[in-house]
Image (cartoon, rainbow, N blue to C red):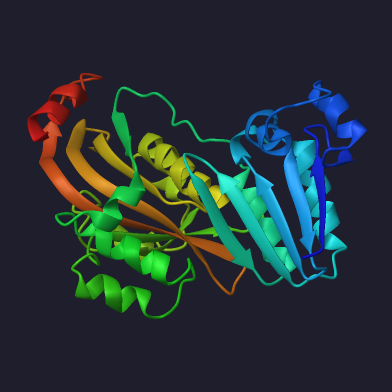
Length: 306
């Protein structure tokens, strides 16, 4: 098999694997290890190979990739005549994805290299991240069905998703938001009728509204960032959330809830990415009255439902 193998340095320079230029950048003239793999995993290099003139293989560690390296590879893909692309990327293990056109390959690289999202610290909302891959072997959580559906659908949203959610009793606590491919605020496309803290039939007149415009603006803004992050990264997010949601500003009523949630990114035929929320209630204290800023203790609520 004929193989042309090159690497892009963290500052966007192209070097041939094992060349003098590559070893100079590596700062090791005679490595006794796999120097290319070391550079990819630890130094933010991207490995770019053309196999038999028919397959482009790209290998990277997204967390370490810098923007100049990413742009250099994407620019190369734009001019490529090859129609088959394989992206190999590392997080806690190696993964591999196949694309049949350069445009989705370019988009996927951007998603993989999107900056890691860190939720804002707040005294009203607590998030505990979980490994979503564990859902595939989980036997007790109904959210595993939607995780399996997403994987089997290769992340593409089609008319079978809604009936599937209904079949597995996930529909009433489901939300679908739309996020423009080029970025923007997530807007509601569907809201299930199981969110009892939403008043005045919000599940109907809230469609088309930004998530950030929820009646509790602080909660809406906090939620919106998660949806944007999932859309940008193209990766699921699985959390346990504890929240004190303000339902009435005048009398200081709140809805204290703890729930398991799964956010999934779906490609569509439009210029939007859909992000679906599937959730399972773990604890609710409906319309708890509090005075001023004395919100219910989220840490104690978390402990009670554990």
